[in-house]
Length: 243
Image (cartoon, rainbow, N blue to C red; front, side, top):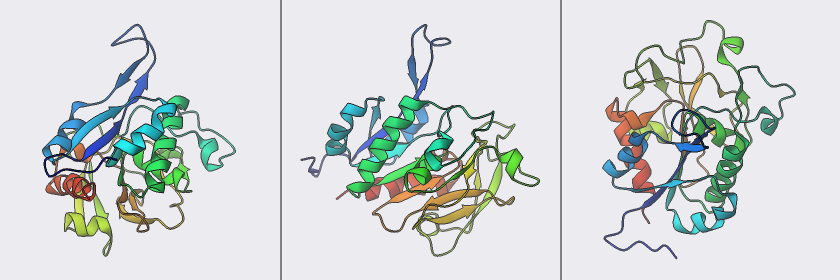
C-alpha cells in the first residue's frame, strides 16, 4: 500500500494543536499556522493535517510517507518522563499528546521519517525515552529569552550546530540564526539519540537519532524559513520521505 508513482507527492502528516471553546469558536477547535503546510508544499510534499483520533492511527500509518509533530500551546505531561512534580507553568493537552505519542511511535516502528518542531521535538525526545526541563528560567543559569520578544519570523538567537551530525550535513553550517518560542527544552537526551544543536546558554536546540531513516527534532520553527538552513531542513525531510 502507499506505493509512490512518479507523479505522486510524498504524503506528510502534520499534527494539530487543539483549543477549548472561545476565540475562534464557541466549540472546541483545532489550530495550525498556515506556514507548516506551505513549507511542506514548497519543499515538494503534500500536507495532510491530522486530528486527534487515536483509533485512526493505524490507517494514517499506512497512508503517510512522513510525519511532522508541530509546536503549539501545550506541554508534554511530566509524568510521561518520570517527573515527580509538575511545574506551575505546565499546560497539558492529554488528547493531543495521546494521539501524537501513538502516531510518532508508530512511524518510528515502521522506520518512516519523523520531524519534530519545537514542542514536537520535546515530544519526540520523550517518546524515545528522554526527559525535559519543565521551565527554562528555573533550571538554566542566565538563560536567553527563549520566548523571544521580537516577531517569530525573525531570529531570536543563534545555535551552534554539532559537527558530524545529520543536521550538520543538511544545513552545511556550524551556526544558524533561529527563532525561539518555548519555555521548556530537552534535559536528558533519549538513549541512542544525540544533541546536534545548542544555544549559547547551553539549552539543547536539536536532537537526532541515527538508528532511524530520518528522526530529527529542532527547538525552533524552521517553517518560517528565516534562513537557508531552514529551507534545507524541509527539503531534506521531504527527500527522506521518498522511496
